[in-house]
Image 1: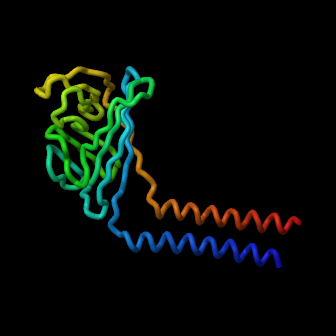
Image 2: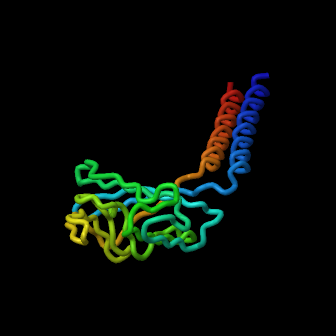
Image 3: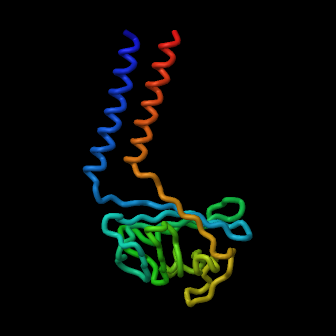
Length: 196
């Protein structure tokens, strides 16, 4: 009797989790995909942020530049930290599909899921002392601080263009993992009951 109860609970939980995952996917067929990025300079300063776009409408290569409405990016934010992990600043370079910076440059290959070419994010909003991150991926990337909003800046840290990008798991993927976990719990309960 206990064995049948355990099987019923496991099957019901798995079915519920899968139903929610399928319903979430059906209700949001064109949802934004989100990526995190991390950069570490030679002197220990770092940048961490995220960006998103609608994967149903985005081309293989996303190239954005300048201020105003973006073509494909929905959001892009970045935070800069000193070597002791103290926050230097957080910037929302793109919010609601609109870039705030005339200096903005962004290139992303959706097939390889890698940033490439010119990159210039944060800053550029007319505030002296703001931080920005620019350069060329795989060549040289630098964290800089603006001095006068006329092109003069101070180099804070740099590296040879290395930046890591990782995709944020989709909610339906997480629900699928929960469902698999429930199957594991059900089989563990079954084994425990069989050994009793």
